[in-house]
Length: 234
Image (cartoon, rainbow, N blue to C red; front, side, top):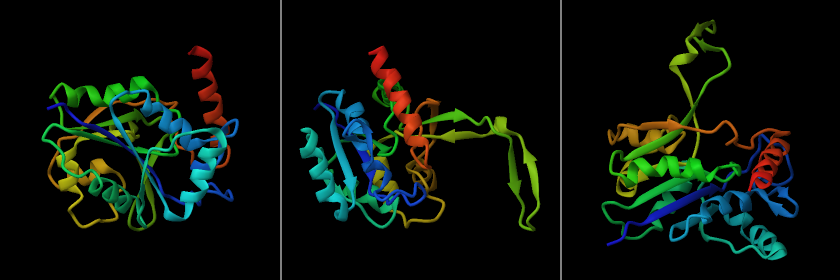
């Protein structure tokens, strides 16, 4: 039986920090094409693998209108929940039966500059059977300070820390089992859920500094420049 690889793109958030009228993943990025379309295209280049898009029920018609406007075919849709954890859980429930070697990745819809090389880098350790959970990470370049309970702070060694990105890749059955736990505030990504369920270890691979998450005003312009550079090289 062939191994199934499913890419879950999470785009149900409101993007409140960005401050735009629409959630950031629905803002124009490449002409009339919105951010999500560039994100989806990156995974669609891998033929034979599935893509699931998680969006809020309220944004479904807006998304479908945006797709019709530019002739873009939407992936299969799953409705999100009130938190990221619940959104991913809904996507996992939609998978149906999964095999022991099937793989699932989870990626932020607001990270449209994800490269083919990075996707391959997170998948290779799993397809080769060396790992069951793989996360991309980059070195922290800013100085860091830890806030103490009394409100003071102290410097910490930044070489001991890494900034985690998506896509994150897992054996599907492991991630499904991890999401059977009760959600906690610490579960800000899928790797944390795996770790909390004692289903690790988590393998870190080199991330990509260009793989930014559009979060604040100005980020979309940076993403546009990065994407244009990719188009010029391609």
